[in-house]
Length: 177
Image 1 (cartoon, rainbow, N blue to C red):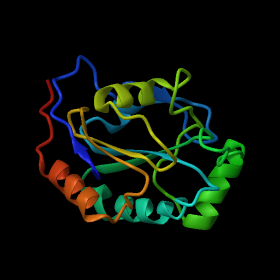
Image 2 (tube, one colour):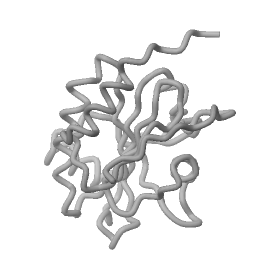
Image 3 (cartoon, rainbow, N blue to C red):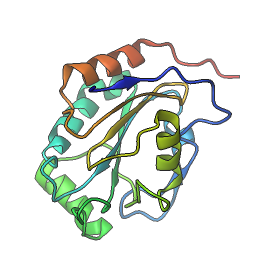
């Protein structure tokens, strides 16, 4: 099973209603405020993983669909065999110099277990699936609900993922209240 499309009940709050610092930054950003109304692809990343070349494909998604309302958000994590050991400054430099990453990257987080950060607790609760490895992907719709999750082996250019992104982008933006 590549992706699980999830018919979820409306949530009292969006899964994006959390504050995180940009990678190597100081000022937290509320994800719901910054990315509300967009289609969001949340990805836990690592610099020393067999899936690390997916940064290139994630950047391609960001470039291809950003103007249509897609936001790719990366969250470095050292949860899987210590594959993200560097400081936030080192991670930022690696992502920029090695893969030309321009999509938003946020502070290093814990994505699984009891110590998982709020965003990943909510993503796991919404899907029933915690990341099993680096580069696990969660697709969040314009309304802030999780639409699907994709395991690490699903590359950013996989037709199933691209179709899910395009379907989410085709949905109308919510009207302001």
